Length: 220
Image (cartoon, rainbow, N blue to C red; front, side, top):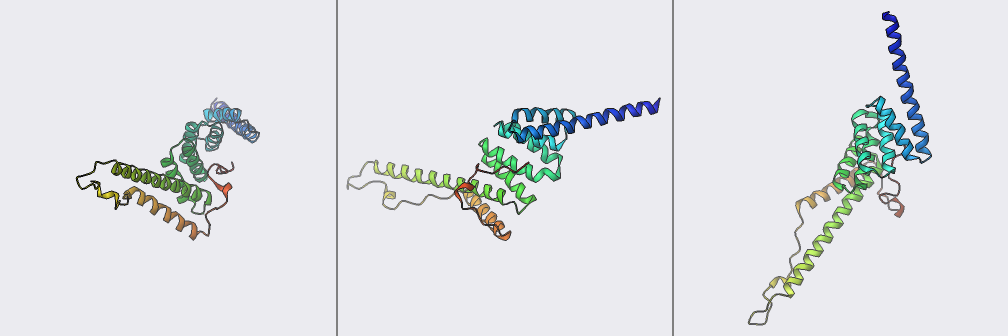
């Protein structure tokens, strides 16, 4: 009787494993055919049977990403990082992409940095991190310029004193806007990443087609 029960349990486990593998194969085929909704369904079915299956969560993240469900993609890739050391680096890179597409550049930076720590030669992660840091610096420069223009306009509109001179002396000698500490940190981060790129003999891509979003997803 005990032997029979063991055989039944083994059969159930084997059947479940076969079902998961079948779902993964079908999900992969559907993904290759760009049928992302159906692929996501198959990966979700696999996860229902094996919640910690890293291949299924990785595939689910990829399918959700192309369906523009970035929140679902973030969760799936984060699960993959937790579940598999082998897939963690690629999952972190894709997690950064998902965060970036969702408009969370700060979380994207963190994910790309973790990906680079795991693989310092990941030139795509280095490039994407550089782009985000450059975008942040450009935005800060624009903000500083806008503030300076506003200060100058305010000075031009100030009432004149009895001598006919503007009360705001800063108009003649405007001070340069101070750079916040966090922007200095951004510059330091950029310098460190550039040094890392040089140490690994990678040049920063200069082609226009290498911009964020043109081809930043890992192959899966």
